[in-house]
Amino acid sequence: MRLLHKLDKNAERWMLLVFYVMIVLTMAIEVLRREIFAYSSIWGEEIVRYSFIYLAWVGAAAAVKERVHIRIDVLIHYVGPRVKALIYIFGDFVMFIVAAIALYWSWETVHVSWKFGSVSHGLRISMVWFFMAVPLGFALMIVRLTQSFLRDISSLRDGSPVYEGDKLFD
Image (cartoon, rainbow, N blue to C red; front, side, top):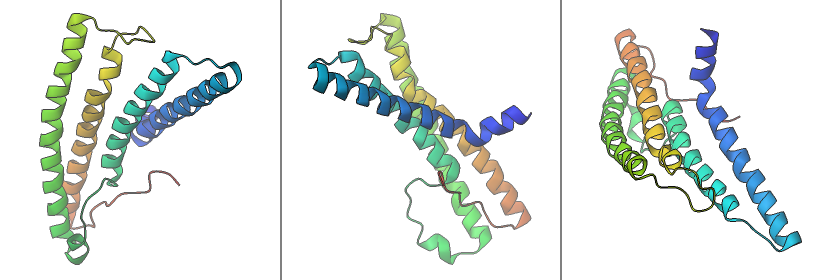
């Protein structure tokens, strides 16, 4: 149970850290190789590119979790807790619908890649692993939106202030 709680609290943070470190280390190695040995590899560029894609999609899920995604919230500051909860519930519902549709269509790309066995040029790894970034990001968003929706319903019932997010990083 403690492990699930820790995963729920920090899963996106740890994934973001892993992908960010992969980007920084690979770029540093490639710069050194290019400047010192006048040689660079195609695999380094691919690792950086695909790590960045995963970083973006996992970061989107983290933003949904902490309610730090871009929104216009000028009016939200002037309404009561009940109306604020309803606005957040409506926003989460719309975002859930969009994420579900996007998950379905992004999975189609993964399926086609799997079916035809496409591989990356440099790493010679199945493109399925790289295309999975998008459905993974949307699946994580759906999980976080469901949690947010349930939390907001509870706040609406209790009349307590709605959760407006924490800092992603201190």
